[in-house]
Image (cartoon, rainbow, N blue to C red; front, top):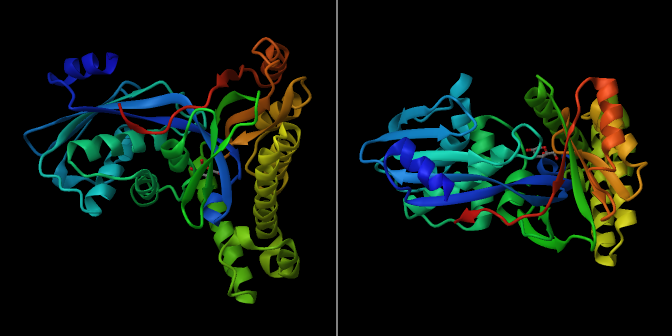
Length: 382
Ligand code: GLA
């Protein structure tokens, strides 16, 4: 394997273990994970692969084929990094969380990270680094971890070490993905299961390469608005477990207390939850047309209510959904840039999208990259 020779070249040793974890597409359930809703995603067959080898000292050395700067740190000094070594926070966060959970680590390690996932495309390369590192560490330090716990560790690494208040969608999809399947996550119970993709459907991803400079703080702001809305609703209804369990009637009754912004965010969450449930029913009935309508409605709700879309994403969704063979399309992931995902039948090809790409480039000056994403296997050792 290529990574074995790369590892030997960088570290002068043969890797002890190789692990990989896929990127993900958010199918539907936008910003529902940290609100306790159901979400549907998929692992794609693009991976972060890591190779690990033991060291005899207490150093941790991280090298990535996508990053110029290597990270070197002592085991006893693992803290979140900033600047051009901050990419190391994903593997280091995983190490920290697993050590805190009881993983016995006495000596350091060398880790090489390789990536065939487009970075910054909204396909969650960060969760993939976390999960791949998690499996490599668990093998090296003889610390068995099941899939569910690995996804929970990955989210904890983001929340407590990287400082991103995300839910479990990305890590859950990367852990539980299966070729030909969607991953369903009940985010209240952290329950994971798979649902077959509707027959004859395909994913096409349009990456805008746009990443809002404030993307992380926008995400955190939305999270905060949702938590505030939940707290306001819980004053009236202490039984309310989370925002995804609220009803539209409850929101109406609390409209004044919520204020215009929080009301819109909450309405998105409540309606998106209904769309996920309807999509699950449509999946059971084999109805891609109905599913596609939910996908596009989800995007419109992101655009109008959750306000986590942008002009480029709106343009792509508006145009691609008019094309033959397209069931529906939506922004996939946190939003404020990133990628649009379209669900199509087999007649849609890159050729079909040529005019769309040209029109987009005419308006925005750069072409989106297009990629036919196939569902892939979940994370694990190779
Ligand atoms: C990002 C986060 C996920 C989820 C989505 C939005 O991908 O990492 O936890 O909140 O945004 O649904």
